[in-house]
Image 1 (tube, rainbow, N blue to C red):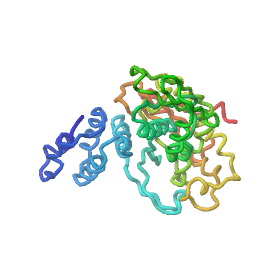
Image 2: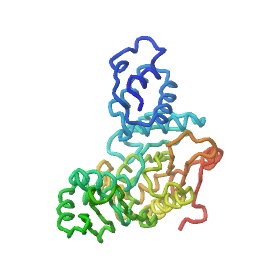
Image 3: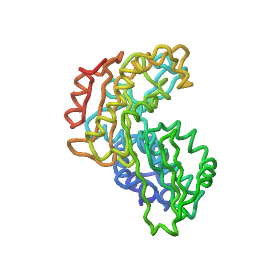
Image 4: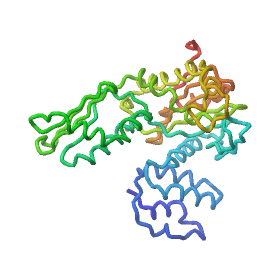
Length: 353
């Protein structure tokens, strides 16, 4: 793991007047070096030293993959590397979006406003729940099996925030001859198991499955918790960086394409028809009387980007255009420029019903 000092020197070593406490900080950064080198390249391209320093501090104050700025800077790095001229941190007035107040969008390119949303719908929540429950069972190894289609909100409310409840339920079950505890939770389709470490010989197994159509249905509102950021006078895109370990179906590009497609189709074809539901019920920062359907039509496209490597052609990128968008993205950009990078493109041209 790279230290904060090493990261600092890669960025500022040849600059005058930048010495500070970070130069001697030997704390480890819990971020893979391949990501840090991409971020270094991006930060060194910033001409304003004060902005460089600010962005550097944004990373080292929380030097792990839980820091949303890591994903944001990796997206900036990818766009710049591939020839996009981007403006970062764009000021959006409240009359230009669905929000009650002004805000800063993450960026703009080709007159498209975009925000970066770390993507890992539902799946990381299972791991968080497993790790929290593991703390309650030091002599056992916890596995979570069954269907993994739940959205992150349900996982947070029903499982992560109720670890003591699930611990007690698990202990109320009759242990197996080997001292394991197993709990079926049919209403959520999952199986929780505590494997006795003493009798397992270090071998633990569980069976999981993902129904991507149900996964898409469960998560169609995921991006609408921040839909007040959608712009109302120009194209707006969500960019979703991810690493493959966040997904149980990430090894197959075709499977990824269809999983993302099912999710976007529900947003672009189903939510755009929801005129009886108000956005403020899902995003408390939204203006009054904005319907879910009106908000969905302000979303011009969604892009999913695998940032686990610096891909040469073809990149691991999937872009889906909303055929019902009020402000469609011009074809010379999508498919245009993205297609030349090898991205998967889908505009639902013959599938908009």
